[in-house]
Length: 66
Image (cartoon, helix red, strand yellow):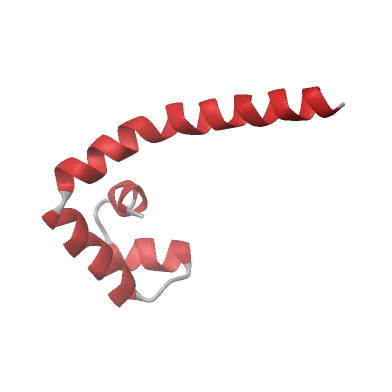
């Protein structure tokens, strides 16, 4: 969600409208991000590699079955 807020020019209201979520939920995400910025940024940087690895694993499993 924080990427959406940033992409919306840091507008919580615009991000909430785009995500079709309550503004307060987006505010809570921003508060959480403010408290755990380093951890979230680290996870966000690793997420694409994790997704790629999992997708490759799924393709191997599907190939093995069939």
